[in-house]
Amino acid sequence: MYKLILVEDEEEVRESVVEEIDWASCGFEVADTAENGSEAMELIERWTPDVVVTDIRMPFMDGLQLSEWIRGKYPMTKIIILTGYDEFEYAQKAVKMHIDEYVLKPFSTQELMQALAKIKRLIDEEIARKENVLTLQEHYRQSLPVLREVFLGSLMNRKLPRAEIEQKSLNYNVKIDGASFVVSVLSMDNPGGEEAADPNGRRAGSQSLKYSKDQELKLFAILNISEEIVNKYEAGIVFLHNGNLVLLTAAAETDQEAVSKRTASVLEEIRQSIEKYVKLSVTIGVGTVTADIANVSYSYKSAVMALDYRLILGNNRIIMIDDVEKRAVEKLQFDELKEHALIRCIKVGTLQEMKELVDELFQGIEAAPVSFKDYQIYLLEMLTAILKAAKDANPDLDPVLGASFNPFAEIHKLTNPQEAKDWIAGLCGRLMSSIVSERQSSYKSLVDKAKAYALAHYHESDISINKVCSHLHISAGYFSGIFKKETRMTFVGYLLHIRMEAAKVMLRTTDLKTFEIAEKVGYSEPNYFSYSFRKYVGVSPKEYKNSSREA
Image (tube, rainbow, N blue to C red; front, side, top):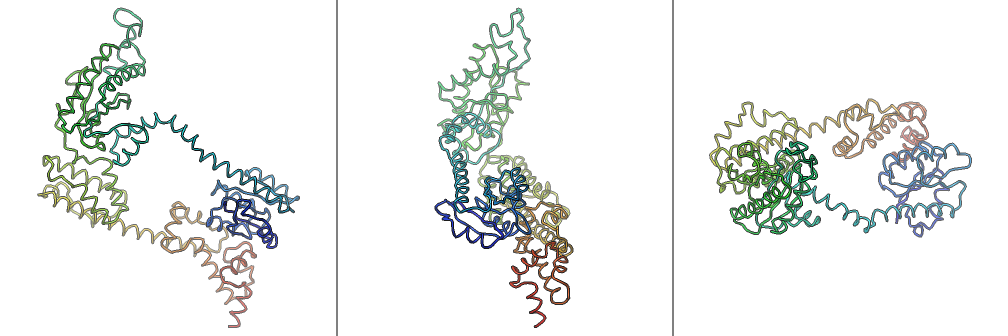
């Protein structure tokens, strides 16, 4: 059943339409009805209907103004316009707004039901297109190689949550099960640096790819050779990333030295085959072996670092990072994932979440074989993330950190991991409290300014949320959420409240006419003021004035 709202200013027409049509048989339910466009806007925001049936000519806000608002805010909502013979000019404007269906007044029940049937078919077709499983499956199948490459690339660029890796590897048919993982990067030596012809004067590409300027063709040839050898030994997955060839090896062994030797053997065969068959030389960087698939980005980065050593060791060889550098253990890698989690928690987390996160950041460090220098760097990286969060939130840092805060001196004083953990947790806790306090103060100041603006300008008929937000230099979406959170009412509701209360005072204490009071509280239409007043107070302005005088 699709939800529908009927907007019609004539009560008899509105009631007869609701009663005479078998809505359920048409596939609709009438969620609500409205007398005019202004009232309809509130109901549409409450119900978010699938269809709005609206008359064109109505007081306060006509059907075209309402339709324009619907098109801007709820573009998927279908609109049926009820129009008369003498409203051709309105109908022309409706065409430009892409109204979905028209019913000419006076209309019969059957004519409106026919229009509803057309709209229902239109909505059904849209849903069917979106839910066409076969189409989606075919599109997904065609996109799979691209999605696979993107996933593998993201696996190299940053640390991904293990659950995400497992889900995507399953979705994209990427087999990376194992107890140990290592990444190797194959880079062409001097790509594009050869002349177009060899020393013997033969044309480029006549005997080999060595003298070709087509780098993609060279990469494709290297990829073919590498895939053939890797598949032969079931040594992992080969793919292109950042202009190089990457081999992600997943091994069943837990012995890191054995994994390194086996990987090096496969890579040496690849290097020699490339040199023999396509007359190209490659240098291969091999990263650290890791026991966690979530940490392969560290292995990739260390493999890229290994390639830098070809400046010292020369090209056309395999360079293993463990041979040229002693790498820090994985537990002391403060990666983007950890940094993002820490900054997010400081800004919007709870104290309990922060305690759990700090425990996780320090978990197992006591037993890790690291130098004091590496440990200090790890703490400084955490401190940098904390200061980034502080900079974004922009609180007064002196009360949080202390006027004479010196992080290097503070870190040097720490004698054990527990002291370091308590120090970091204390900094985060104080900063979180400061941010929350600052945020609450900011919210209150914002709402107070909005209230003051409303009190000063409620008599203006064109006052709106957008006008207030322009005055406060903030977005309407942000303002609406803050205002409702702080006052438990919408800004429109608050504006109505102060207008009606001001009107009540004037009705009790002055001899002003209703239309004069309407103008003084921001209503250009006296009739709409009377309508709003009755809805807010329960009686008309005249009845309220008489009863207050009698009292």
